[in-house]
Length: 153
Image (cartoon, rainbow, N blue to C red; front, side, top):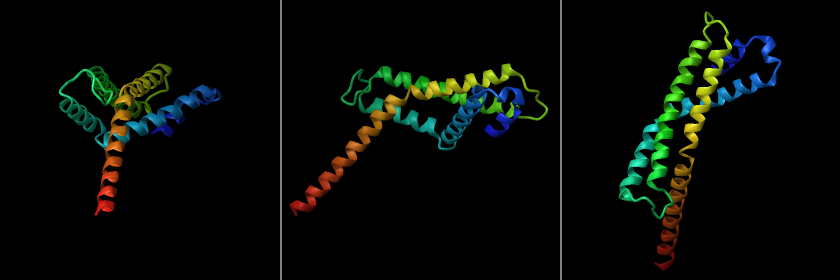
């Protein structure tokens, strides 16, 4: 789809590197959006957020460095990203149709939606990073405990 998007640009506009870069960025964002949609990413993240909230009893600050504000920001980011991803996909599908004439305004709207999706994804990076670190630590502790059990026997 991203290739079709780039081919839609008139040749005189493709001389500028900016349009090529935008088309490549759109390709990356489309790939990410489709990967997250197929993997049910947004639902899994919402479950993680709920689980974190239950584990910490809604505490504002917890030992894992995640507070209610971070969870709220992440939730808002998930919604923003999911809506923007759906828009990017839908608008791009319309844009690449042969019967749709090239216009700069729809192109800018698609790129703007791709940026909104990226911005939404950024809002959950802290939460995902902390969750990943916690999971890694738990796994390490389990491995150490298993080794201690083996050596103590």
